[in-house]
Length: 138
Image 1 (cartoon, helix red, strand yellow):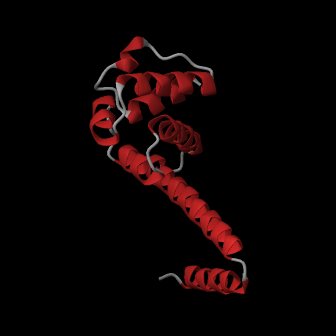
Image 2: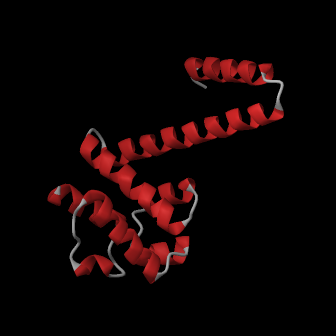
Image 3: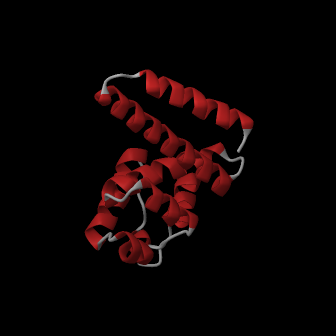
């Protein structure tokens, strides 16, 4: 393990042990988990999009919306992006039905003020295609 990471974990553990109240410990734990998930998401976006911060930013927004509309955990959403799921894959693997997919697309349209052509409702539309379309139209 990286020395700096090990030192950071030791510091977190020491602070955690100082907390006497179990509610404070729980809140700290949940906050740390959320930050780690956010860092993991940013890392995945960087790996997927290299040095292109615009694509990374779009990917983060799209993955957050997919998480919101699917109700799936972040780890499953990250896997969906890593494997470049199609609409059909999202249905089979994440349990997203046609209405969820349309709401997801509409959520992106509202959030980013763009409009997708109807072909993006097709079963073979992939998450990468959505991100590329957004990057081209923005």
